[in-house]
Length: 251
Image (cartoon, rainbow, N blue to C red):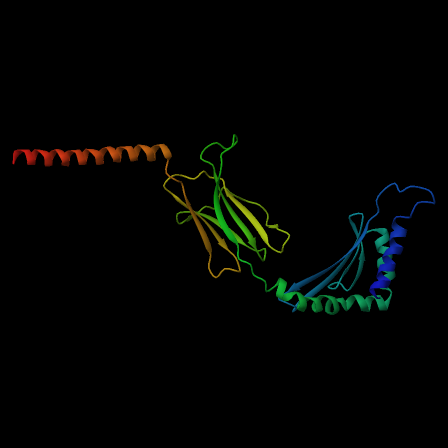
């Protein structure tokens, strides 16, 4: 069955599932019919599965699965469709051929942009300011941005020790430009004098990418140490000056 015939069949189904109102009557609701074709690839095109779903008002009522080899209905209307289409040899021959005609054919054209595409992530660490619910020095956030494909692993380390607990991550979020982003929060407040690292592993990287972070010195303590150092240095210069003056006077 060609695409035009299939579209015609879907139009007929729309009339059957949600009959139009009588002349002059207004629509009392929304009726939506959608068809979706999927190709599932395992190890390239070694194993290919074609799935065609038919959905009415968000409910799947009919599906063709190449692994099953025929239509399956999930509602009374879907079962009637499945029975009628499964009994048509031309429709069955067409659907079973979609694995090669639709999936394998399009795979070769899309492979450079999908399976072979690699975009390395950019990684940064920032200190999230404390809030009323989480007082203290704040929390560390690792931002992993603009990478492809979506599979990625992000780990937090304190020195050489991995921090597997108190780590919260968002879902991998698509940016809309064929790249993804991920945020991973370390809920444990950072401590002064320790080094924290966010390590990212991705297929685009030859080796794991790490970013390091340390708590900056306390401003007041730094000023105090600077003042003490200045006082000591001034005292040393004063002592040297007095010694030089005494030696010169005695001579």
